[in-house]
Image 1 (cartoon, rainbow, N blue to C red):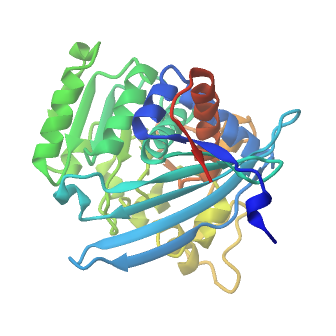
Image 2 (image 1 turned 135 degrees about the vertical axis):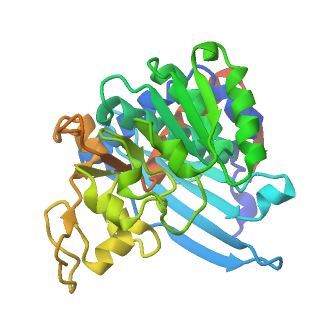
Image 3 (image 1 turned 120 degrees about the vertical axis):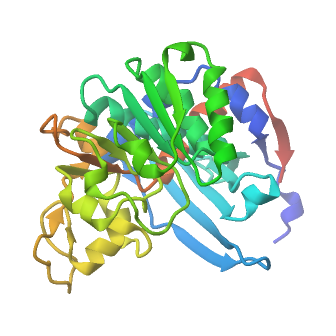
Length: 357
């Protein structure tokens, strides 16, 4: 077969600056809410992610994630794509972000590349959008305190979305194992419009940070839980973004546990909820243990998904004093949905570059 006789095909490439510009004014929270609702209604395809981990020559943990996904929308073409996001724990010490990668969109008819764009900004903002939706639907009525554990780029993305989304906020407690990061984030918050009504404090430890907060958002790189149930005030919502900060006891003591996708949590052997399911202490939403595993005394089920809450199929918070955990494993369809909107806006504005395969 002579491939030289086939016509060239091109695609749009968007750098981080292009992505940020195209996202300006985009309602990312609404875009993510639509994708979650479609997923809850069965209008998505979400294969298992591919994971590759290794140790760098300097001894740091590193990994590559490849996550395809598609959304099927009534009356509109499907959105098909893949997110690849790669990370090395040692990167912040090198003065570069821990994570980076690409988001790829495909033409749903020809399966040819349609757009390739920087992934880290989309990943951070859609993650913060899931937290904002969790606050909207699972938090107490007027949360006044926010605790951020970890003060890197993902914490900044949360500040960007939560400050306008939660106008009742009056206090933000920050903690980071690197105090200079907490100080930098505090200075950033102070520079934002409207932040003069918010007290920002740097906590000496994570327990001090969370004890008075109705909203607790861990965005760390830990792999061993440390947040105990008695650290949390009654009615707290824990948006468990980094997935390993809670102890098993905190999960078992929660009044409601919400996930984004049970199959991803169930099949994952590395994160807390997946490990609990394998140990028989966490049951599926139908109350059943993992196949071949016996439920242990005191085991609790996952209560439902955030998409079910958005669609009104699950009530979410049942009591103002219960602890609620939102455990967003992270779904490629959310990145693909946001990338689709950004690509459309980039096409309209002529952003990025046209590259030829």
